[in-house]
Length: 388
Image 1 (tube, helix red, strand yellow):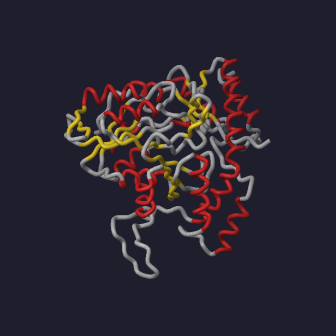
Image 2: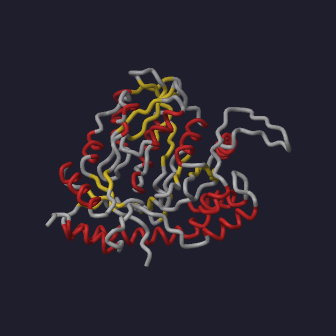
Image 3: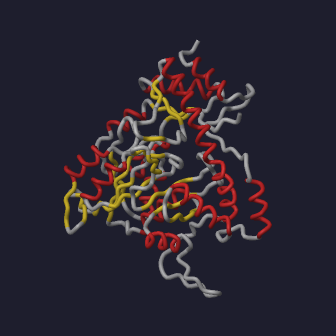
């Protein structure tokens, strides 16, 4: 009998399926007004980037996250790219981020012509380490004319962009202080962390609130989905106006003329997708509650059966988008992946660190000791919202 039999049986109990059905990693749930709103959108004739569902969704996501402004986009990657472009990141710049992330984090940086610089993560948060960030800057950067300059490349380190891995909040308060001291802008990749919070003296603060702006994703496998979709949240009015302008091809409003006053992008979320997103937002509190129940069940099981579950850190409330366990070594990880997937239980390793992909192998990094350690050990378990 496999040493993993107990956890496989537990997963089957959480997500009952017939013998020939795969248990997905994270499947969408459409349990509310999705069909109603989609029909209303179709009947209205406004199915592209203009329509009331886009406006309502932006208002609702801003309210939920506690931000002043929200700009809906076609996906999370376009949201990140738009922010970086709007704050002036270009080929003369570098952006500090983590290598242990989905490739979109690095791709958004590369779209601007800038180069990623990879900093290690903390073992508990799985996200960018403020200690590693400070050490890197002290060793490799200098302040010059109110800018942070990489001493080895001569380029401006313009932005630091941590990612909230699997919905576990990064240590952005500490990162923000370091960035302020070094004249670096903080942008948060919150693609996975809708519904994740910091808990400070009983007060809940949503992820994405420390940086100048934050980007989220609503891909088909996220906590809520509209097929694709993304959003930018910010409290900066000037930046919000610019982002809405450039994500709408930078078209200057006019009854009939087509005049575009700067480089823009066709990045706006279609009204059709926004209708789906709005219906999903109505169910988000229930989704988060049920996902927390699944995470607690996994945590209790792992504690009793000797598996190391990736738990919430003190003073954080993750959305547990994807639940994860940490195995002792790469061989155990590979055995688990092979056996679980062969038995119809979809599990996945954490991403290959971005610097191992051919287009980013030239990028500067700090050794990434923790990232490589986690690469060999972390596995994501099925994490869908359970239907009672």
